[in-house]
Image (cartoon, rainbow, N blue to C red; front, side):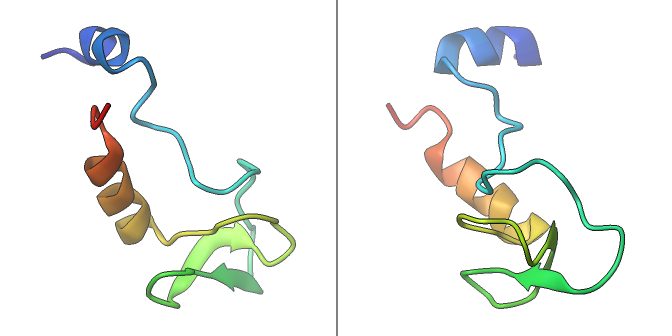
Length: 67
């Protein structure tokens, strides 16, 4: 299934992030993942739930098309 049809079917893009901001940190200090506590690619100043790339991908898999 191509990505455009998947987005239309699910009603949302699969590339969304859990953090409220989309900015990535240029260097330390990084925020830690709320699930596994590993460093994320987001700066510590980001508010909201921050997830590392692995946990973010797993969360997207769990919530994709679960409607």
